[in-house]
Image 1 (tube, chains in turn orange, purple, cyan, red):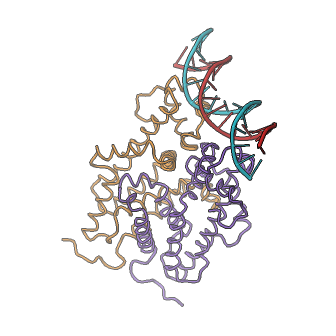
Image 2 (cartoon, protein in one colour):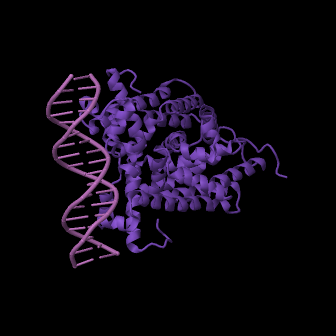
Image 3 (cartoon, rainbow over the protein chains, first blue to last red):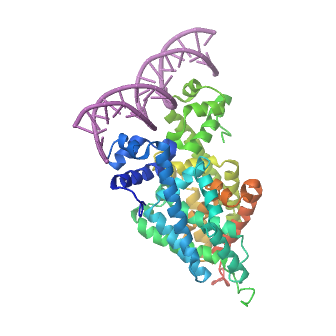
Length: 217
Length: 217
DNA sequence: GTCTATATCTCGATAGAC
DNA sequence: GTCTATCGAGATATAGAC
């Protein structure tokens, strides 16, 4: 995170620390003291830079929001075959999470407490932008159905299924590691395995079981 | 929740209220005052029954844990064909969440903060019980593969995918409703739609695309 | 068992020295 | 810009009346 922003070094340290703590405990559960320690400074400096806990949270969340929506969208704009798009979408999505699992943690925490910040933010984003990730994904699925490339599935539910199957791995990582300790022992290997599995099961789930029913015009 | 427990009526009210509040804000973010108001009593009574916030949280979580693991396991013990088992597993899992979305919220919150309570609890549960939901699910998938009923997928990743695709719908419900307002307008209908979609895409994802490669012996 | 009142502590936020 | 010290609100938890 905090890649290309007009932040000083200290602001970045605070920002990253806040992201980490907020994504573990949520806005209410997070402690300013813990964020300060994580950033290697003291509480007073947090307020010097961000005035209040609420402003700090909003700054963190809105930045993460924009980064995330952009990263989700980009692979969907490429011109490729449907399976190739799907593969890149899954790979990209998993890679973002591998590096920054905080993003969807923060997002889910928002949802659990009724989405007070992300709700209005997303509403505005969807109104102002034509090419958003969910819309593009749904359009891609619809085109593929119309072209006879995949079965007639519900595009929106397919979107939820793909996202959910990707994200859940990171959301439930500690529990899943308790069930299968190999996950924690070789996290990177498990993520690569998971990318392959996801494309395999999901594309197979979308594809026709026998031959395509229509010929492409 | 709180179905067949030796709790008084007041204890149940506290219990349900605590589950609700903990599942929205997490253990640290939850306020005893809010739990008391939700239960229609005052703070002092919470401490009378459960001594401390920590004990209340553990009581809530361990009960939810047992209920949940049992409900997950039951459909996997039935004697049926693989697709029928899968369908019942998905339907049952979705129905539990439709009625009690707090369960997986609480579980995910635990994971986000490093699983301090569920980690040891799950470890002990897996050691003491032979027939647990993850184990049974994996065994079912393995048997189906060996019988030539489905493709040779990774059973553990398949478990994660099925669970994740089910749970994410509830975890991200507010966000998904922003994208598609129909979800919130007809929640029950959307859940039934989702059950159908999930079985369709996941079973199709597991099945052979052409004919089974081996004949059953 | 259930309440009010209060003790004690922790948190977010600010004041002020450097 | 960065720190220490501290205020005041709000949190958990307890005491004690009924």
